[in-house]
Length: 300
Image (cartoon, rainbow, N blue to C red):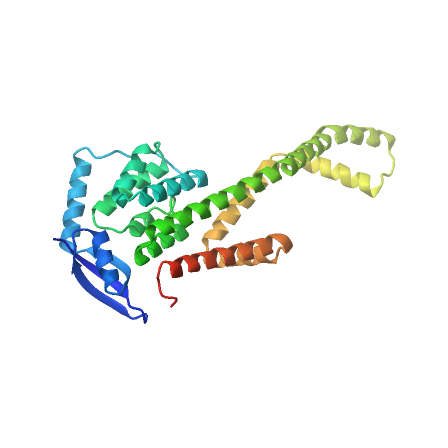
């Protein structure tokens, strides 16, 4: 019978480290919970894990599933569907490994399928579900992995997956509504920019030639319009280049800790968006905390 090493916490918050014999990891977690402990980490003994990994590596070499070429991240819609399906399979009582294999077989080639192939191999090698998910940040973000970890710690993975599915679906619905609401103003602004650009590039230079023939002193507003036309005509290539440069700059700034902090402070200062961002962050934090407490993890 396999031996599992685990780390847990008792009701007072004291950390406990020990080993336990069980047929499966799920059975080990149940035995530990019967002792009154809350599991925070569990894994099979090193020898068993190494053997499992070696076996997994052999199966890969002997005709394991090949991963397709894919770049980028998975879409929120695809992640919502995967989470809901995994939650349904867990509610039906299927083992987590069997559920993942079913979903991996159903997935179309892409980032998610490649990630699930690795997740299945990692779990067969002795890793926990949260540890396997954490190796694929392009597919599963930190909140997703930490929620799964909370479910494993409290033995309430089914409830956690339901909450995750509900959370992702609500976020996807809100995002879809915002996009729908932004279509009309985006189209209006785009058409306005194109019309103004057309006028400045083609029409205003014609009037400039007429004004030059008259030899008159032009008003300041007219001179400003002519200068704007000259800038558009001479530097037209900067039109699409400037937004791209700004977007790349913000992306690079977000990767830096100090830059991300500055951007977040700016977002919080913006009158309407700041309040929305702050409240959504507080709501997500409280929802996560509520899920942890409901799963039986001590408040500390």
